Structures are given as structure tokens and as C-alpha cells.
Length: 254
Image (cartoon, rainbow, N blue to C red):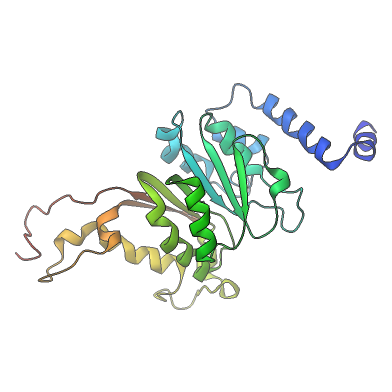
């Protein structure tokens, strides 16, 4: 009865602010526990998926740093007052972080202190360039956007160079790699146009020093991918200087 009364009497903005305040109070004492934060802020990164344990492992080093995090996909579809759950979770987990979001729909109503949201397509290269000009280099990028195979690959090519050394690029919901309506393929598991096969192909970059190809020229990814981690429906790509030498091969010759 009280809830119904409040919904009738209070504006959407006021209700959202009260809900966010309530969740922030519930989160006190759990700022280190992404599983708990995910449940409090109602993200599907826990429950619907099992992502938060992996995020805890890979993001622990950023916890108290002044990071910049960009997440593609705010949630809530066309409703301007719905979504932003994971952005608020990241804000709580990273107390000194700047949190940015991208969505195809206008989600500006969900902005708050330390959360800024841009409206545009994840495959609009001019838009992405403008976003990163404003954010500066990023420490963390999370693609939870359209999940269309071609979009995921194009966005990675555009944004990975905008990631700092030491940063992490994450791709969620890679099950669409096998779904035809997202451009995936369950029949040809070597299809180079799927998310999984594109990123599996990049694992060879880790070992480019071992290639027996005279006059081989390193690609950007050869130089900058230092580790990749594949989980159920989730990929982490870590950036740095991949300059560890081979113990046998010199100048791509034995």
C-alpha cells in the first residue's frame, strides 16, 4: 500500500533517487563484494550470469585508483528512466573512479555524480572518437552493448587503442557468437566473422616472437596484448607492452 501510494504521488525522478539512496545504504559495508553489490543494484552480471567473480579477480588492482571506466550498453531499452544498474555498481566498487556509459537510447536522466552517459551507436566511429576525446584514455572498457558479432569486433578495433597500458577490455555475452540472428554460427566453429573466432585468432599475438616468418612486421595487437582470459560467455583482454623475447627464436628465425 505504501509503495503504491509513493508511486502515485512521487515523480519518476524522485522515486529513482530514493531507490538509489536506499541501495547505497544497503551497500554500506559491502564495497569489496561485487557479488553482493551486483545483487543490491540488480545487475544481471550476477544471477542471470556469473560474471562478478571474474570481475573481482581482474579488477581488484583498480579498486582504489582514480580510474576511468566505460561500459557500452546502459540497459532499460527505450525507457529513459530504466537501466544504469551496473554503472551504479561500478561507482560503488570504484570509490575514486569516473564511470561512463554509452547507449543507443537517451539515458541522460540516469546520470549522477561520477556517472556520465553518452548517446550514440557503438559502431559510429566519429561518435566513439568524440567520447574518448572527452573521457581521455580509459582503464577499463566493457562491451555489454548490442552483442551483434560484427558490432563487437568493430567496437574493439576502435576502442582498444584508447585503453591505457595496464588496462582491461571486457566483452560480455559471447554466447551470441553461436546465434545466427546476431551474426553468429553454431555449425561452422571456424567462421572467422564470429566473436569467439576473432578473439581466439588474437591469442597468436601473444606468441608473435616465436613466428618463423622472415621480416615479419608486428601488428598493433602483437605489441599490445599481454594476456587473454576466456570464461563462459566472457572475455578479458589485458593491454601492455608484449615485448618478452623468445628463448630460442631471434628475428623470427631459429
